[in-house]
Image (cartoon, rainbow, N blue to C red; front, side):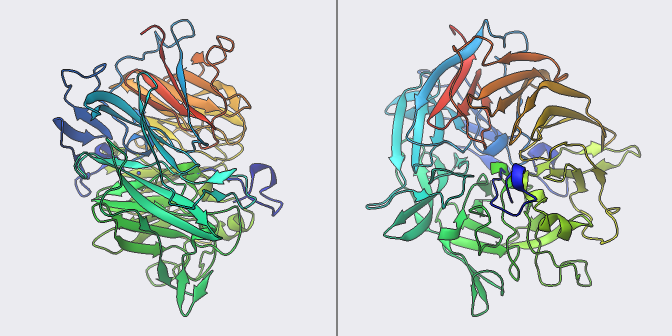
Length: 563
């Protein structure tokens, strides 16, 4: 996984990057998460309904508890009633505050309404830094509510191993996940990396939402082995070396298990493709899968995007690595190596197993050229009727080869060395420059932000995606492109939000029905709304009338001015 500029040259990599409840068919019912305390209601489409306490701040019913809003990873908040295409403009909308933090924010900020901290109800923004800190911030005023460190005595965050993708520190990289039903007051789960006396440690933490205190006897040190003869194997088992990895894909919470996926530091060997599951109430490791156990590489980059999930399956894009072109009788790689593949992982019981996959006919050549899937993230689409009236359950992914791949989630297509005819739909060359980001979906439209290109809108009709964009932004986005998010009030007032990663980053807002119509950008009012530099994993969070963006040293909040 090399930098865009040098991915064919063989040097270091500089890479970026779940199924929604509405997207599940009857055969895969959504895994609802139930809330409690303060009359918390159902988590539906990643947005939690919460009753408003009498002493609460501005009324809010939406929350963001996971990367890109829900396990489908569609990136859409459909409960945004304040921000509209009419009032999002430079005269009435802009930067409200910039809260300083102690390190780079690579994760997407998370948000909960009406959480009682210190006897007072607050709308709370949760954010993490590469300095191994976790913050709870009043989302309306920018006041710190609590801060805790994931470091133990004598520890520091890890250095970057000379790799620029997560730099200058590696601490907490990935977007945490929140469960309001866990613990006495709800729990936020984070994974942190640290070092002490030359030893490197990865831990999973469970923190009380109201105090930041450790729960369930945590944290738990992350260790793992898996049968195989691949990279860093000993005596018939591949061994997880915490020094060789970072957890940068957003955490996935599914059926009371927190799932982790791991990347390497650029292409520094040895590394393989790890997925792990931890019980959310004990922090005990309950499942481990290695996607390249008898080979090498195959990391889970995904531009920081979380693995997507239905009630019982996980979907992800595995990066360049060993793929066994010799298949067994069921069409699976003979030695269990799934490098550079779109995979579906079944989660029944304590076991993880690749249940299906797709990879392109030239997968080996793409891996060798570092032109793989893994730079983008997987998105699960809602059910769609095709031209024959049949309901299709689909997933979409894209990477560095500029193609969009759409798979039938239960019949993904596997591998054919001659062609990709078994895939549901493939649109070649649709994303000029390749994709180093995560798409978003809203109301039949799919939004991609490829590198060195415009933000693009593609439209579904009868369960097929348009082969050319229906609209595009006036702005071209430099490396690594942009990961869009969408706000809307149901199907109305939809806005697509995107970050331009220039030296002074720019927040853009576009009309979701026509990206050629820019509503706002943070340079329109001169320096008034400038907010610093967002990390290249930067993903905006839009909720309760505000937009939150993590930067290299702060979290910026935007909203209606004077409100």
